[in-house]
Length: 313
Image (cartoon, rainbow, N blue to C red):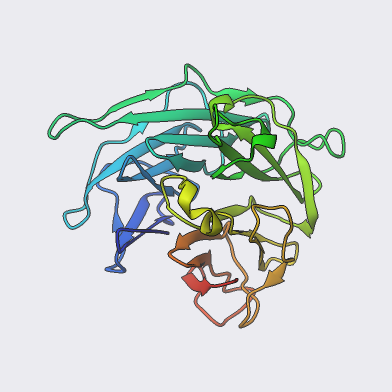
C-alpha cells in the first residue's frame, strides 16, 4: 500500500493472475493494461508519479505509471531492459527521480538495476533511462559461507554518515540499504553508496529472528526523497516478515539499524499470512498489510487483505 498526497493506493495479484489495484478504498479494479503476474506488485512514487512494478510470468520486470486514478488510466506496461530472470516480487526504493531496483534472480544472486526519470512538460512523455544491464551482486549471503539469498530483499534509501564513504565534498551522500533473508532464514543487511548501486555488498547478520518470506521494510519521512532536514523521521524503520510459525512478525529501529527493538507479533493476536507482508510509511505511523491465512485462523475469510496501523517512538 502507498499513501501519497493524502491518497491511498494499494495493489495485489489476483487469483486470476491479473493485477488489481484500489484508490482511497473505493474497491479493487483490474489494471487496464493486460498483464499477468504470480507475485505481489510493488508501488512507489517516482518523480512525483505513482509507479507500479511487477514480475511477469516470463520472469522479467515491468513498470507502469498512473496517469489518472479516477478513470483507471495507466501507461502501458514497459519491460525493464536486460534479463532480470526472477520469480519473486521486485524490491524498489526511490530517491527523487531515480528508482533503485533489486530482485532475487533464479540463480539466487541479487540482480540490481537503476531507473532514472527525466520529467518533461505535458503532453511530452517523461524520458526514462536505465543501467546498461542488470548488475549481478556476487557476494550473496556469505555468513555462514555458502548461504546465498533465498528471497528478494527489502530496500530503502537513506542519508549516510561520512564514515560510510558516501560523502560528496562537504555533503553527506545517499546510501541504499538492503535487507535479505538468507538460506539460514536469518536476515542480513548491507548498505552501498547510491552512485555505486550494483557493486558487491558486505552483508552483516541482524539480531536473532528467522523469516520464511522475503522481508519488507519502510522508512519514515518522505516517500520519494531523502531530506537532510528530516533525519529524525528518516532514522525510523519498520521491518516485517512471515516467521517460522506462519505468523507475521515485526522489528523496528529509531537509529537506522544501529540497534533494534526486537521481534514481536501483532498486538491483537497472531497474524497468519499466505503472502509476504507489506509495510508502508503512513505519515508519523506505519501501515502493515497482510493476506490472511483463513485455514490457520478463522478470524477473517481466507485470502482477505487485512491491514493495521503500527506506531512506535
